[in-house]
Length: 127
Image (cartoon, rainbow, N blue to C red; front, side):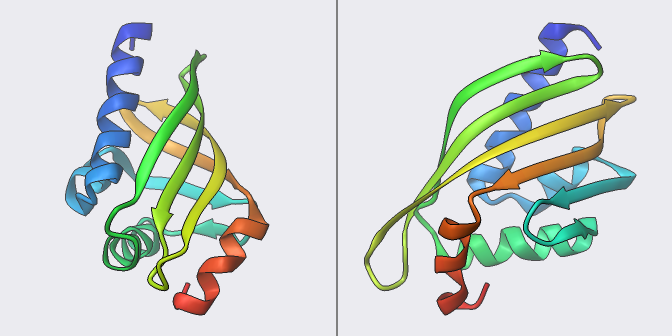
């Protein structure tokens, strides 16, 4: 993939997640794609889709603000902030960074580094 194609893929992927479109997000992954989080280790694609569906229900006004995106060999790195209103009305945000490896135009591996303190605030709402 060219750098431009990787940039377009990254924008499409983030848009699918932002919209909460689980099937569009799933289509971005290779069938054997791996998702890893610093907070809980590896997650299957099915579990990742369940997480997205939970975010859509629990944080309907979520917004991803991309602070930086860099094309790297066979993928991209992105730093972003996830903002939302918690079910109790409190404003919330979480810093995150993903490192994505692509193979044949699909995500082969996604490593996501999340602010664990911000993530812990979601536990009282079922996550």
